[in-house]
Image (cartoon, rainbow, N blue to C red; front, side, top):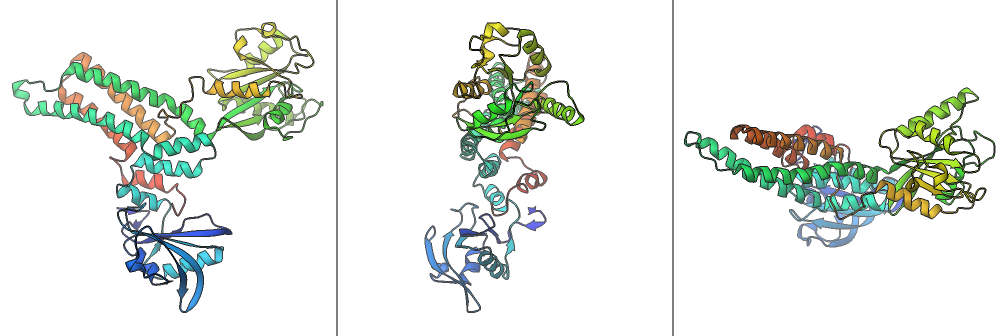
Length: 463
């Protein structure tokens, strides 16, 4: 198949390390001419007789001119990343040197790789399935321990194995239902309807769990947007600084100091929380402050967690309750952070108790003294991962996978409805085939050229 208008049987080359000055740069080739192309410019070991998976020292020379001293590693098909012959050249990390080596390689019958083309070839050559290939991009983009762990687990095939087991069991029943069509005149049932219903219910439990895990997987992958909101001088910026253990936001006793949002990353237990310090909530005094308050409300609507902070020395139960009614919408998780306990050490949760402020949401702190800040971090983590964060369980983090799983669930629900209403086996088989199709789209057992183009064009070149 072509990819971005190019022939996938071509030998390709690309810089596999980021551009810029570094200690070393790695240039990767893949394809049937990879070894020959490098052998023409490499002085050292005769690469045509080189042992696979060995590193050889030598020089890249063109027209008698030494370009660089390098290390060359050859990987022979099919035991390579792409399943083809692969050669990697480790040269000095000068952008000029890397570019010169690329230029002399490209003068032969070699072309530059497209985005993600090495990984696409690995998929097409059976080295990994599609969900594993997508995990490669997630691993490269990971910025936290949890995001890294999630990508590693998927790249190693945990998600794929779970789906493959479900798919095999469905295929068994689909084949029995379709076998019945060959014996329609004899009115024979090969597929036990009760066992099929039991299997569908069992699979639906797994599929539903995977669908629900997407919200968790998405925040692990992208970070948890966490808004700090409250009235002016409640201590929002002081709290941000205390959580970060650095002076990131300007702190002042003058109300309305924060006019725009400030965003910083806080890592708790390997998960990134994107803290968003917002403008104080009050009747605005000027147009800029009006815009700041509007932006605060917008950020809250797009957040995964709200930290409502209030001054225990200034606000009473009614005022706190009114603020929460204004800020808390739908099922948004939130904590009520009772700040300035150093000024009112006798403040208790029951003093502010309301329908929206229960004791378990009340977190007493003194941001300026950093009192209870570590406990607040624990509660922030536990509020998002209230069902327990178990890295060993399968978690969906890819929106394409989530959409496909929703289609699988809908089709299987239709099968169950058909079983209860006694519809014919051919219609049951049709819905099961549709469910199998969507499961196959996730792992790439069923794929289209457009789908592959859309996935791999988002990769970096060289991977």
